[in-house]
Amino acid sequence: MKKYSKTLQPLLDEKEYERIRRIIEKFAGAGGLGPKLQLYLMDRREKMDNWAYEYWLNDMYLNCRLPNPINSNPGMVFPPRKFTTILDVARFTARLIDAALNHKDILNLKALPVEKATSREPGQPLCMSQYYRILGCCRIPGRIRDAQYIAEFPKDGEQLSEHVIVMCRSQQYCVPVHAADRGRLTEDEICAQLLYILDDAPCLPDIKPVGLLTGWKRSLWAEAREDLMKEERNRRNLELITKSLLVVCLDEALTNNFNCRLQRGGKGFYAGSRDESNLAHQMIHGGGSQFNSANRWFDKTVQLIVSGDGACGLCYEHSMAEGVAVVQLLEGFWKHAESLPQSSDVPAACGSHLPPPERLEWILEASDMKRIEDAAQVLDDLIKDLDFQVYRYEGYGKNFMKSRKVSPDVYIQLALQLAYYKLYGKLAATYESASTRRFLLGRVDCIRSASPEALEWVKAMTQPRDEADDIGNKKVTFHLVSDDKKMLLWDDAVRQQTEEMVDNILGQGIDIHLLGLREAAKDTSPTAASPLPEIFTDPSYRLANRFLLSTSQVATGGNTFMGYGPVEPDGYGASYNPKNDHVIFCLSAFWSSEVTSTSKFAQSLEESLNAMHSLLSKRNEI
Image 1 (spheres, rainbow, N blue to C red):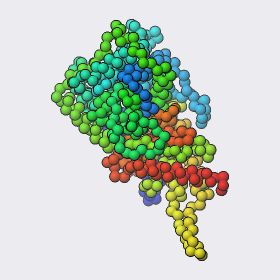
Image 2: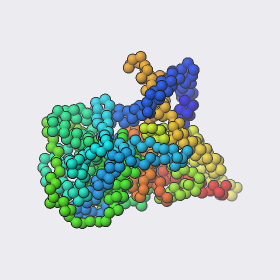
Image 3: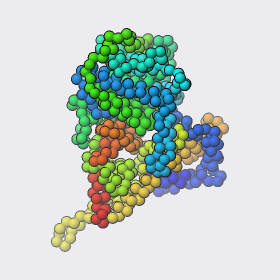
Image 4: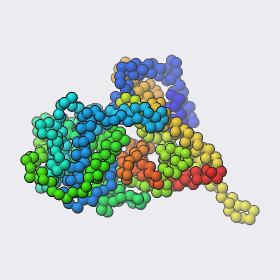
């Protein structure tokens, strides 16, 4: 409660802060409800592997009724490939699938090595459960709350069949890649199946873009799915997709002007004349119903995306696993595919005994088609509203940050606070994910970067300069806050941010605990209509959880990056990937907001990082 009180301090004026402080003291005091709810949670802890996991999963993902794309699913961009023929596309994609099969063999044996913490009490084993929930898993829409399909693993000696779903021109094909009676397909055989699909899909006039329903609002998609399930063929199609190892999306390129925003930073890569921001749009949402959004199944944990113009990446459903686990897996797939020599040989399997892949045919009523149209409109409007850009800050990178004896993550978080303050003259509740994998089933808690110490530092950094005349009428400029004072405030902000980060990864964050107390109040209330404790109904609680800055460090190898949408209508999404000499930011907002702009935020971020470099470069001089 003391930490929660401190969290609210920079977000409220003095009068409001004193009022909520009294509410907190009443809740936490000896006669308050807080201690009783704490006992309930402690009892729950004794009975469960992880007392918080179900609460957290429902609150973070499964209770959300917004569409998956942009609101939840991140997109990952890989450096584009150079494809000259359809065979190149099929060959590279076949190698990605082959890598997935290699990894699934390891999962089936439960043979993933257990990772260990490398810092902050190093050597602690980290929970690996989410690594087993990536391949073969799927989110299932529900009218009130979604569910998850989690693949079963074979018993000793058991052989499981595996298949992938390949989407091309909004059609779905089932490709069996491992049969219990004949083993797994070779790379050549997978390549031959993909070539068949690439040849067949463009010839089909009857397109039923059922995939668009997965980008609809969750309750509406749940109703539509229930009706689809009434037909046996549709039911089988949905089961095949749900239980598939993964989905492969063979895409068409987006138009050059899909994202017309001028991209800042020049170290990025291109697919033809398409810049990184354009590529990121393709991976996050597909570009809309007229492009590739019908070529998706947004509920599927892994959707590998390969475009004919060389654009490659991933869209993934977030409820099963965190970005770190997914990034490690996908980078392994790409490394496998790129390590093999280029091959332009037509696979010998083209004339083999293998039957062609099965195209999934749907039985749709007029009401189903109307729902698809409605889903397309909702998704298209959401996509048109997304203000997204990849911004590469090229002034310096993590080498300089480390030279100042500061964690790059702490450094960048404070840069984001300064950038936001420069634009809005205040701080906002900020979410940064912190891994809690030191605990069984641990996922993430929230590092709150908008601290009182950060507020004092950003105020000092944005103090105006005064000008005065000296005796000779010569203008003299001076700062109201000296550099040495700014440095002291910087040290305080760094210390607080570092403590907050360490507390979270060691299980001492406040957000999951607060969520637990709130849910405990619901669990123990006399009736479902009973009011929650005042601490959770007061407007300050909503303010504390209205994350206008939703951030995360997504460190990747090479030149890849991951981005996502904002979580509030007037908020920003900001993922970042610090490199030695630059930082890749993926910034998002909504055009419909009258207060946000990724262009303005990128400019403010550049100014902030430059000012921090200027200040900290003087450290040895003061």
